[in-house]
Figure 1 (tube, rainbow, N blue to C red):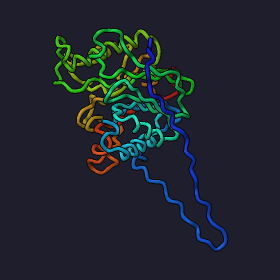
Figure 2 (cartoon, helix red, strand yellow):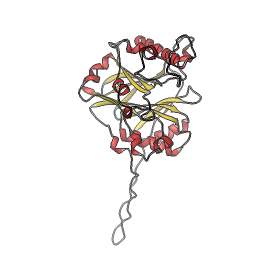
Figure 3 (cartoon, rainbow, N blue to C red):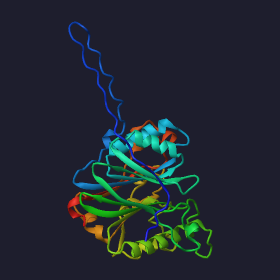
Figure 4 (cartoon, one colour):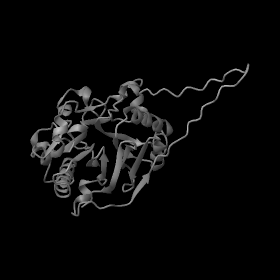
Length: 317
């Protein structure tokens, strides 16, 4: 059962656009200033017949670049046009509010359970109805060790289809070696997070469509003895990582760097397998960093590129 805790909910409000009317007689027409160009407009998703979900680590948003970072993030989200964007590393609550103000067609929510980096969601009002918001807080002594920040749950309805999303940001770092006997080992902590999330999904959402996503801070393609995701990988009839081929593919498709490693993942439960296997389904890293001059994306926005999951609506349960 999900425990609903204190969340800060901010709904983006619509802004009125005012144009200048041309004058009469011999007076000159005053030109209307053009809208600023969106450098990410070539990355549009926006398929009306498919559910599009994105995970994106915004890298200490917006602690360093401030309003410039807010404007760039808003342009990326607007260009992608995805139904739901799960974000990580909200460092300044007021900047997230600014982001929503810059996105009049979207609403959003951010958690306030971490003193430094919080989780959040942004969703498209025209396609998504939010049914509930909550956090996963396992009632075990070691839960704090598994989750530096509590997984954030968003239950939605999209075109008549109900599903749950679980946004995560696992413990970072480590040496790539899983030391199960050491509870402070970073890989061990991430493995524990997976174990607790699997227990939660199997109990609270048995037989239901769930999308688990976020910056999970580890490599899906690691050898089995050092792989923190084995609790899911060992049950292919119940769970599937939609980005498995991305993790095993060429570096130019990896999300962190971007191109240095693949740490941002999207996993689905069995009721979504048919949609994942359907024509038109996809999971990939969207290399929006390539739209900006060399280095600007990392300097002004994030060291992660968004990862998108596209599921044709006709195959959703």
